[in-house]
Image (cartoon, rainbow, N blue to C red):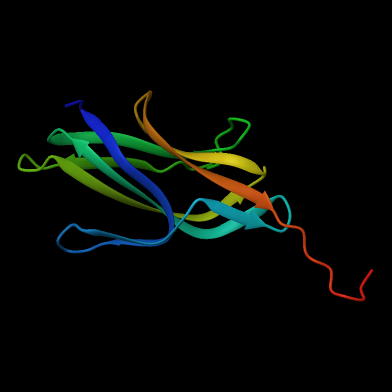
Length: 136
C-alpha cells in the first residue's frame, strides 16, 4: 500500500461525519450553473475517502480552473492522524464563498506534498436568463 491512496472524492451540498466515522454526503453534484461571471458559490463540501498507513499525514485540497489556476486563496491544509488500528481516513472539508471566474471544466485536487492523490471534475455553465414572453 502506498503511504496514502485516494479512493473517493466528491463535491456536495452538505456532508457530515457521524460518531461511528460514517460519512453522509447530501446533494452530490458535478455541475454549477451561474448567471454571470465572476460568481460566488455560497457553500459546498468536499468529501475524500482515503486509504492510509497509520500515523500523521499532511494533505492539501485545491480547486483548479479550466486554465489551470488555483481558485481557492486559502486552500485547505489538513493534518490527519490515522490510528495504528486503522487503514483509512475520511475527510469532510467545508468551502464557503468559492469564487468562480471561468466557465468550463474545473477540478478538485487532493495532494500529499507534491504528489496528486486524485482529482474529481465539475463543470461551471453560464446560464443565460430566459426572456419572458412579450419582453424584448
